[in-house]
Image 1 (tube, rainbow, N blue to C red):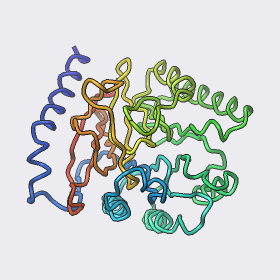
Image 2 (cartoon, helix red, strand yellow):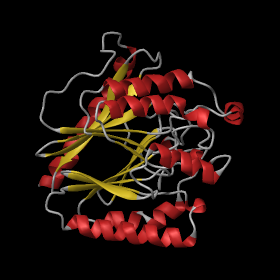
Image 3 (tube, rainbow, N blue to C red):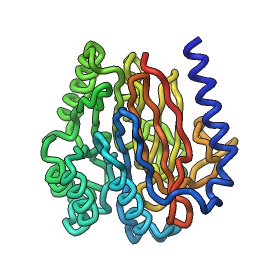
Length: 325
């Protein structure tokens, strides 16, 4: 019965989102900054792919005022009241080994940390561009608390496991060590009475309908089976695909949220889609966005907060959630 109610609730939310999409995007009366929530729950904010477009990328994909959109997304995240933490899922900058490329993100991180907001990073492929060693070093300079590119964080009642999906940048030994860490963390968290749910974060998505980039076959092989097996695992979050997507496997949720400012990617949609996408927008491109993950005593809920095409305002375009098991 509970499972049926969850499914019904999710369908109702999705239907409402679809029904209101046209009016939402055309409406001029919606607020232009996030509202303050007065509940006692914890809010986690997640964004990804805030890199400025590279010259070669602009030759292939249309430009949509991307750097302005990035600043809008960063500004919205900064204006959120009292988040418990912020996660960046990778490709923070265009070239991780180039110090000047980090300037907008350094300002963003400094403002969050000045407010006492913890910020956690997932290393993306752009962090390795030009020089893998220098790029990784500059990334770790921004996130010195975690010398390895895989780690876990408890923000009870949730726990987050961060993984490095850049398999080509890892040695065989590192891949074995990361996989061992992943399995051990899932097992330990299953027995942690304070933890009610687990979120796995990686840069590359195991599933996507993206026309430009492919899904991570290695991520699906290495990460997904243990995720599906874990009773407490709730969400698998990734970026890399510059779009908003939602896939469901065995009742588990795989979300792609790569809308932080990079050039928007086209998706296969309708009968051409490789995987069933539960995101309510059926458009080939999905606009700039970030994710709000709300934890309450009774359960969790995620909301995609998306900029309108004029970049002047935003809308909560899609929400769903579930009770704790």
